[in-house]
Amino acid sequence: MSRLIVGVLILAQLVAGCATVRPSPGQVKTKEQIAQDRAECSEQAAKATDSSALKDGALAGGIVGAWLILAGAAEGASWGAITGGSAADGAWIGAAVGAGIGTVVGLVVGIKKGVEQQRRYREAHESCLTERGYSV
Image (cartoon, rainbow, N blue to C red; front, side, top):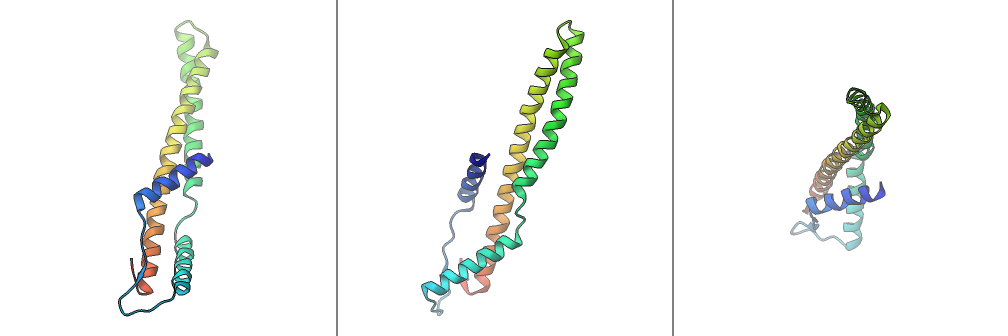
């Protein structure tokens, strides 16, 4: 799971790019002032964005995965019984397919929410810096 989080963060950074912060012409700010402004804007942006995106993605994937496991087990058992094979074998195969699909759905939802969260964070951060007189 930690590899997934790292992957999402790397993808978000690649999509977002890196913003450089420069005081507007005519403004003189020290490196300490710039660092303090950036830290304060980062804190404001973090508060402004929803930090539960990965949790929501995992929850959605878990719910969909559980439903697909049960549905796959039921379908697999019924087809196993209809075709003359073992209902237990069909149930395991159906449950495995359901789990796989649920995992993929959860991954996609989590990545989508993570990218959206990163976009909102970046916009809030840039807006804060612009309000303080920086060109981003």
